[in-house]
Length: 341
Image 1 (cartoon, helix red, strand yellow):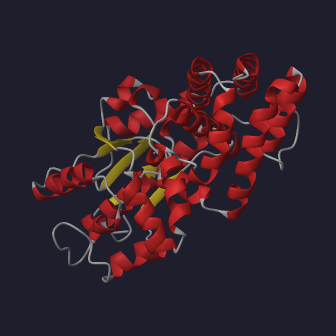
Image 2 (image 1 turned 180 degrees about the vertical axis):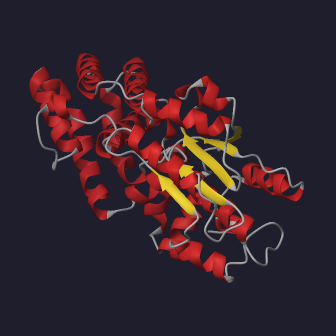
C-alpha cells in the first residue's frame, strides 16, 4: 500500500511525509478515527516508505524487494496485533514485547500496529506502557483507536497523535465504481450511508447486505405492533442470523448490529428530509425515495427527530462496549413508544 493509493487523509499523509523529511520519526504514533477510513493502510504505507530501497517523494516505490514483501503480506518486520475475541490480552502484549526485544530481521524500521488499541485489558495496557516508556531501538509502534479518551492518558501522552477524518462521499463512490466495478447508484447509496467509512461502504455493496437492508427497514415499520420481547428478539435475530445463544450473549461489536442501527438511522434521516421538503440529492437510500414519499405523511416531524437521536445514541453506546442487550432494549422501547405516527 502506497501513500498515493490511499483515499483522502491528505493532512495525515503530509504530516507523516514531513516527519520523514525532517528525520524526526517518533517511536510511537496514535492513529485515531472511526474504523474503515485508512488507519491500517496508512500504517502499511508508512512502513513501506520507511523501508523502501528507492523511495520517491517519501513514498514507497512498490517494486523493490522490501515493497514487494509488504504488498505480498510477508514482510517479516511488520507486526499486526488485533483483539483475541473482545480484548487484546496480556499474553499478546508479552509476546509482542519479546519480539520487539530482538533487532529487526531485515528492515531499517520494524513497525508494529496495535489494532483497536482501546480493547487492551488493564494488564495489557500497563504492560504496553512499559514498552512505550523504554522502546527498543529500531521499532515504531502504531496504535489504532477510535478516540484518545478510550486509552490510558499515560499511553496517549507518549504517542504522536495523527487524527483521521471520515472520507468524502464522492471520493468513496468514485473509488467503488473504478476499483470494484460497482454500479454507480449502489456505490452512491453505500458511500452516503457509510458515515465516511470505506470499510462500511464495501460491506454495504455486498449482495447479502442489499437484501437484508430491505428486511431491516420493513422490521422498523413493524416495531410498534410487537411486544417488547418480540421486538427485541426480532432485532437481534435479524442483525445476526448465525448468532448462537440468547440475547444476553450478543456481542456489542457484532458488525450486523451496528450496521442495522446505521440503516435505521439513515432511514429516519431520509424520511425527515422528505417530511420537511428537502432536496432529493440529500436522500441516502435513493432507491427507496418513492416509498419515503408515501410514508412521510404518516410520521410526525418531532417523532422522526427523536427517533434519529435514539438510534444515534444506541450506536454511540455500543461503540463504547456497553451491554448490547441493555442498549438495544432501551432503544427498541423508545422507538416503539415513538412509533412515528
